[in-house]
Length: 220
Image (cartoon, rainbow, N blue to C red; front, side, top):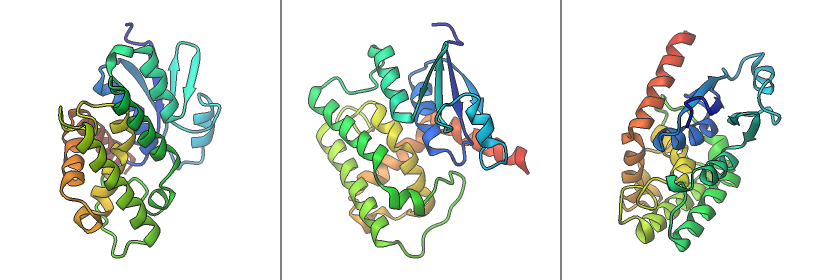
């Protein structure tokens, strides 16, 4: 594959949870791409994004002259383009569950998103957790426990090996680390805490974090 086949348009690494998802998957699967960074929360951010993305949002994947936007759509596109990469589990039941929980992450958990926006480099434990956020957290922990319990025997990720589901939930691991460090309060038996540690131990996540630090330093 040519090194410049793909171009991935992303936002700030400290903030852009949606950008992290396809970036992490592509780096994990060793799919070469050119990274195009658009600074968010600036007066011209929307105009810069619109140069690439018809939705006006990041991330966006460019494959030649074809544009694919939205994190989950990008992951599905990559799964079709690289069927041997294992972005979805090979087992039919595991694959069905992986798609279900990924779609639930994609469309749900608005209270958690709104209250706990991604601040990768911050540590801001919440003094009090709104009831709707607590409901979200308990549900996510239940998802992680189910996936790990049913299909996680062959590795440390939700379905053993890394899949698109891990890409979808990696930003949640970041939110938990920033805002909700004690997951035992919300029904965790240690599974969720271990999974957060697994995500942050990924070399690719370490690279993303270093990139976030560099971006913050360059902006000050």
